[in-house]
Image (cartoon, rainbow, N blue to C red; front, side):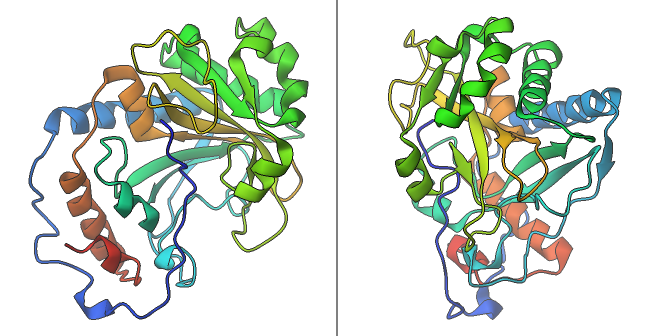
Length: 287
């Protein structure tokens, strides 16, 4: 869907950290237990798929980063630089900017990115093939409902997509390069250091969940007919090339189910308690 999933609000430290964790941290209302069962199955299938491809799992980092000047100290992405090659990670994340979007069913206070970096001298074509193999062969996503958003540098992926019955000319929405660089929102360019100038070239993977018969998004940000389920790193030297998959979004693409905001709000506070973390960004989620 059209939300910029890299939208981040920079917070100061004025929040009263002592009031961050609400009393209802465990036991949120409005549960969607069916989703959580489906989500657990998605994680199991991801673990099995990566293991079969030769990747080993590494443990996630704390929900808190220690850098309270960015995203209120909450982790907003898995650490591209610290993840070893030939390993994958299931990283819990939260973005304070999502609080303003909580009326949207696909926006959650706690979500999970599954990321990996293939070993060796992996190219953008290699990471593109890896992503598509996972989504189509392991999870059975329909290529007719799959599309991409990137920048002109993605032209090198044309042979891969054409070969996999995803014609580049039909399936890829190319953004203006200067516009994508200025936006810093990862559908085209991703900045591992949110304050830095070095970036990776990316290709956002979108899945059509709506009823409109669109071959690909017609404009950026895409309409609610589409949900972003992952990103392929296809170029750059600031971090190894790899892929990331939004586990909740992948579950949504397969089942049409999403958790409620409240149940994942409770999960966010519980996760922070388990990690012993109280970054000021948690106060933004306090109701």
